[in-house]
Amino acid sequence: MKLKQIFNLNLARKFTAYFATLFVQIIISISLSLYMNKRFTINLVLHGMFFAEAMVFLYVPIFLLLVSSQIHMDNCLIILKYTYVEDWWKEKIKILLKDTLIYLLLIFIIPLIVIIKWSSKYSKVLSYKEFIFILEFLFIMLLLLVIYGAIYHIVLTIIKKPIAAYAISMLVPLIDLIFMYIIKIQKFWGITVGILAKFMISYDLSFKKHLFLSGIYFSYFLLFFVFLNIVMTSTLKKIDVYRGDKKSENR
Image (cartoon, rainbow, N blue to C red; front, side, top):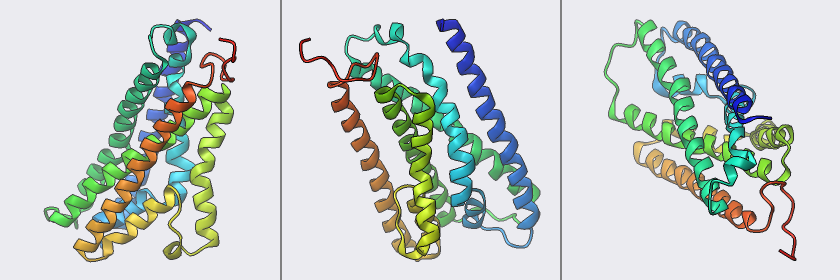
């Protein structure tokens, strides 16, 4: 496939992902604003928008569609532009971070504005706890989505099969959801989505305890992301990036 065709395909995927996200978020926002006319708090809004099932079956699948639009970066002509393959990987992560930030703002800022605008009962200024909770949520969600994207890129680089990479990336939050149904959420920490659910619940705790737990959750996701990058950097030295198999010992 020519680079121009790949570029057009990337644009189509990005447009589809952004449009689908915006459409769904507007519907969810309007529904929540009508439902919460009598009860409106930031934690309820975020929980109503980003509950575990929505993450697994809505946000993550659409996000991975967006991430797959980076397919042009896997073209051998693009890879050859980089002296070191590690620089190519760093560039992929930079693009991933940029796309994730845009996606996150799209699924978060617009719905929040719509809900506040529609809810006549919500006229007070955000408290410091609510404001900090929003910032914590944004940082944790950013890292969580970046982790899913990084897993997709790692699997794709190794096996060179986009559909398989997509399916494996989807399994990560799905495993959490399955265990959340089997084990009570209060007793299950999970790997990714389970941690996000615990973060939502922690809002009802005292501010100091909530802040402490948020720091733990944020540190966990940050270390998870760093770990994935270390694993990938090490893997890149052992595989042929063009094909995904191991490098020949004779090279």
